[in-house]
Image (cartoon, rainbow, N blue to C red; front, side):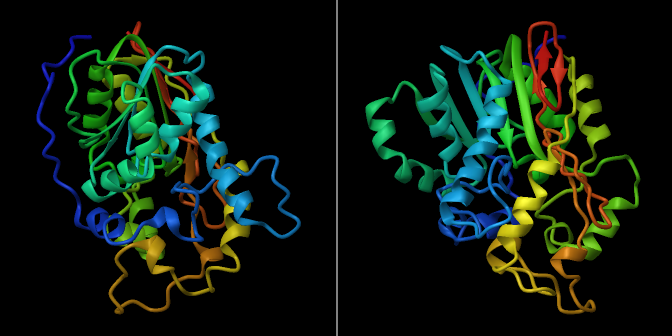
Length: 322
């Protein structure tokens, strides 16, 4: 694969309005819905879902999501990695402190998220400036040179990417030959074109454009077309949805949508908003797939790994880049 000439391209990303509004005014990581500085649905395996859930359980579930993704990249000691869509930087800090990376760059499109990340982790940034930094950039246009990273990972950000093909090409470009990539998010499980419309009718995040109904086949195809090899998709929904639903139950009344989690609200024109339990599920990308309910969405852990050596790209668990 011929690498692009994107070295050092300027980061002047165009942010979708719904993304700007959802992640700007409110620090989502400080809310009970998330907590601990993380913003993901959590990986709940090993957490008792039969009894009451504590805030500590919620934080552990989100840490566990990062553990699932970062373990896919192992061995990681001494490597340079890029997190695409780092949000508040909690996952980047976990990568630095627990996985032995030589350096982590946390990239996000939203300047307010990056400012929060720098404030939250000012101590780590001061102690180890060579091991952690934050940078602004879009998944479709990364402000880094060719082959700048050994690994790339992304946790629950791909649902906001506007162009999967551009993301895949940029991921392949910034990875060195032999590099690996992992993506975890939620995706539509198949190429059924009607899924997007159905989701927009059920969930505000899709109706407003905050989330995009990307499919697992589309992501796999994009990574392979970019030159990555060994692309695999693994569903982890069974470890995501039950715990997320249990956590939401006392916070989310049927027929409503917490404004702080859904972003811009839908116009009041449509009939009643379906209750949370009636909503479809995505495959939780690693590709985690646990489509439940009417489920046009499979929660695939979209943990796609793209290694760079021979351009193998692995979706769910690891991908190689030649």
